[in-house]
Image (cartoon, rainbow, N blue to C red; front, side, top):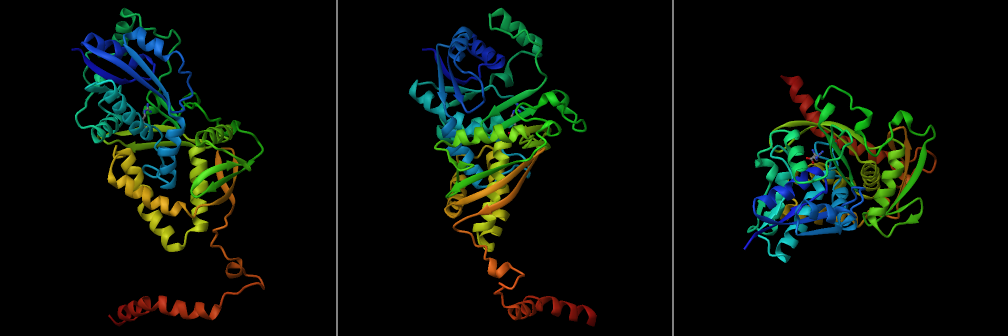
Length: 400
Ligand code: ARG
């Protein structure tokens, strides 16, 4: 019996070559393609896959699953890898892996395959996720071991097997795009001192060419879930995110340029565009600052965003740790109902207003006007007790 493999297939040249290569190696290839909001027409994918040698091609719309089950928990954790990267590419891998395993079981395949290289993070994310879900499935990564030494050799191979190679001059970038944002690397970006060329950016206007008038938007949350934009309710999360990408992108918002630490020890320069995600992060953080008491808010900020980002980045999605952190942020999210007003202008995302039925802001306590109800004498006694350790310290120091 032929060995059967489910391949994560983008429809691009690289994964088409993989279909052929695996077929030549004696595998029966079934391709799997997910729509996670990469903004491409997927209608021709099955034909492309079959032309390359696949016996079957699956295409699935996962936009809402991705938004609900992956983007939303990450937003609730305010997770940013190394303080900057909203994990766009990293988040789609466990979801795709989950579906690969599902179809491997359904079609009785012992193998799944992906097109990631041996230098990146994605191989780790794919493989750890697959093993967590089904440790008996073997993962193949042809790019790590095939014989091609250059782009030219791959193109030659593609031509030999009638895999269409676009005549248009290819952009030098490697781009991964989904609903949550775009990741761009390679080419001129490999010089970390050089400003990214404008043609590297895919979904955002350059801030200097963004509208000269600021735009105000209001994002509504219900129990930690973004549900409305400017008063209009969105039943589907992914549509709201897409709308925010469009508006934010117009204003040049959500561009990120960073050098990051990959899992395999390499530092890499990468740029990201995540207007929708960054708008939601700013909004959600601000809403939490209004509805959480100081103790809970500080605990959250100290312990969750960095840890959550690391686990997503490092391929640990399918762990009890992630589930436990989701339980924590889910508990907090119950309080996060309200609206946040945001001003978008020339690349900046600025929160300018917030309100909530759960707001802990008490004007009579905060005000410096005659409405003030705060007991200032209590402040005197509080300061005395709070400052006692420093008084003791000072005394001992001066004695020496
Ligand atoms: N560096 C990012 C990560 O590891 C993005 C990698 C995605 N690939 C790309 N072609 N930019 O999550």
